Image (cartoon, rainbow, N blue to C red; front, side):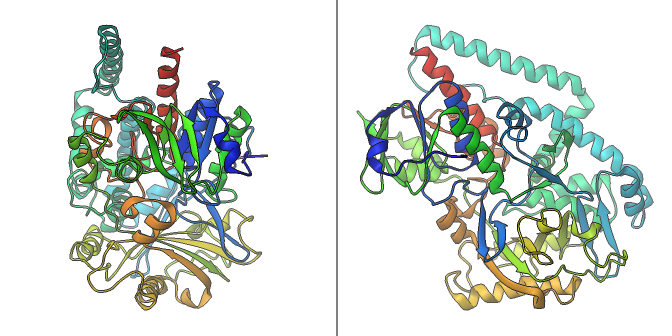
Length: 561
């Protein structure tokens, strides 16, 4: 049994828990697993009828199971995979895609990229021999940067004490911070000065600058640049977009860097496996349990939560997997938090330009540029398919439309077809298709996402764009589900529809996430912690915020026992 549930609110309120977790997304479940393994009694309170948050599988069209929000796996930390035995013990099965990406061109050409160095050289050479020679050096450079980031991802940021503390606690804090920075310096010295300068250049620069310095072929640069704007409202010309590129390539699958994979059964299988590990350790996961407010004592200390039905559930430790805005602006009673903290949370960037369309089709799309003699599925169907952008300027133009308040006239689309590798999610001969679409403003100036005709018009615009590359695609659609930014906010709880719980700009990462001075999962309220993507190291199906927060809580609990 992968989860334990209570049949009544009475069972929840009849005991005081060591820890409560708001939200059964993958980070909340990860925190629950580590806390329960540490000997704490833990209850996870999930608002929806299903666990997983954005990493969820739902049958939206009869017979078709969709990864409704997140749709590919790579960022899940190896430490979480191994320590919780997700693959060996809890049934998580990764389905590696190779090639990794396919970019069709309207002029009849295409670009396939994967893990095969010979394939990459051959494919890139169709556009530029110079780029084909440079690409292995580019990959090697990014891999060295990713190794540097491992330490940062798997560690809580150095603590900045915001509360009164004893001299002993202050000394201990200084020692711990010194150890962390010493490790960072060792990592930096292993890179060398030139690589460190290149690393800073990548972090601070627009991705367009970075890629223009490496390559000359438009289609290659556009394919690589897409990773820098996924889930972002930013253009490829925005300073700092280089970090988002790094964030999307720093993951791994079965030990191989930068390799993305599908998950058998959909992304909900990740949440199911983590939930199984949590339940095995003794954690209790309760669905249909919406938290309406935190219980606060003396305006300073957490004492539990109040559910939407009025039930009080008590604990002196609460971890929130909700967004920072939801946590502090909606769940915490007013006039409790410091004014400067409230202002920082309120004015953080939660904007989104992302729409997810999940589609059931009766046949695979056939790309007219791809004459690979594959009557059914072929290498062009296996990885991420980049539709509608053959240059960085096309991505920029799509972004500019949204900046002007309207959905992109020519949307930027990443298509994936998980059913090519995963035979468990669709009927034989039929397929599941994901379209990750940008840029779509939260509040468009030319219409309203609640208007059925407006929604349908945008969906058809996306389908028609796919038709340009794969004629007949629209006629293959059996049904679809579309989540615009307001839908993502309402259905999944993502403030502003932002899939990362907040922007991943340099001003909101590491020591600045979620806000300056509160980056190590603690909050101004004693006993309240963040464990979701709004905390360090940020968004994506990583598990790192949940794991790091749980380790911190266990340290805090042990101090007092």
